[in-house]
Image (cartoon, rainbow, N blue to C red; front, side):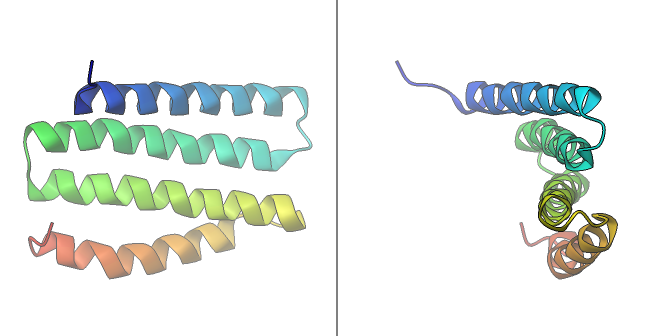
Length: 116
């Protein structure tokens, strides 16, 4: 029995959503560990990316492609900020903004021009 692509996307989206809720629940019990909330937020972006990507597969278009890429890069940049926050205890915002700005500036213009 082979799995189809939609089933795999649904499984990844569901498990990322569950992990996000788990991290959020852990943050509720240990509010001083703010990196848990940042990681939970990053997974919300990844879950959003999975559902937008599923729509992109069904109906490919430039705007859905841009949205898919933006959600994924925002999620990964937020994970970068969460890792920095975990390691140093500092604010994740500068790393998240820097990672988002660089990655979006490099990848979104070609996608907007139709290179997908």
